[in-house]
Length: 320
Ligand SMILES: Cc1cc2nc3c(=O)[nH]c(=O)nc-3n(C[C@H](O)[C@H](O)[C@H](O)COP(=O)(O)OP(=O)(O)OC[C@H]3O[C@@H](n4cnc5c(N)ncnc54)[C@H](O)[C@@H]3O)c2cc1C
Image 1 (cartoon, protein in one colour):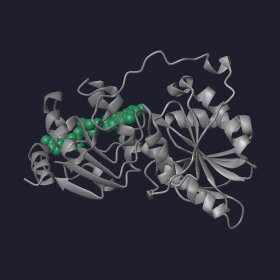
Image 2 (image 1 turned 120 degrees about the vertical axis):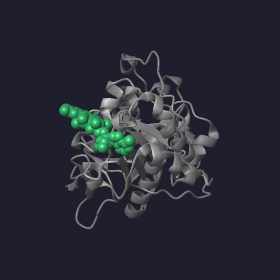
Image 3 (image 1 turned 90 degrees about the horizontal axis):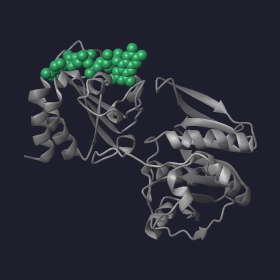
């Protein structure tokens, strides 16, 4: 029994969340006394493939067919199922993401596997196969036992701190059986978010709400984000007002993120906003109203006018 890790690419580069999944997979393999194979789908440069080895994979399987470049969950589920069969993998690990969700559900159906999503810790193997999962948008944990022979674990982003080594894993070409029917839905174009750092993968996020007063003030927030190498985000009303693009909107109806640091500027902390950000490791709230609900969920709070606080914070980060 081996562990197979499904690795996602972003323009040919291994995603950070997938490297976390590879590391997690290697730790599970160690628990089970077996090996880890990382499966990379689509075109990727050799130095990118090598990263999977440095994060714990014993072997890298590369299905380089260009038709797999587009993140097609139907085709991916077939390829991952085939790889799992050839490798004898009974545990399949992936990073939780929108593509991962769509792929994993199909894969579970194909393999009649048990699927646990939003996993935050290594499995407890002392009595069966139990995993800890984050539920209710990060407000609680569930302990779930997987009893199916094949188990699929989708790991919550940013919960595993991977260790990089000098290890050098062999890369094997993997030739899957691809059916035309799997490509019945094709991506014909992609419009990418333009931020310097992509929001779903970001370690640090600087976010603005209606307290920013208008789009003309965003340079101030972007300066702090730039200094911290952070992504920018916003509350729903901000994107509804067209102050910021919709792909930056976080919350119940927007993107759900779990960065290491979330800095909320002029955001009240409505429950629908918190639903998207409360699994962040550290939350810093800047709000001029000491009664703002967000302070209850904050690790650090600054009661003050953001137009005063943000430039000072940026200067401090830049060391000026
Ligand atoms: C079904 C549903 C789904 C929703 N989904 C989402 C969602 O996904 N994401 C989301 O964000 N919202 C969502 N909402 C909306 C949510 O309920 C809130 O209305 C919204 O989050 C409030 O946005 P805000 O905090 O930016 O604005 P406000 O509530 O107007 O808060 C602005 C804050 O800025 C502070 N402020 C003002 N000026 C300054 C200053 N100079 N310096 C410092 N602080 C200042 C104020 O004290 C205030 O706390 C949803 C609502 C519903 C009903």
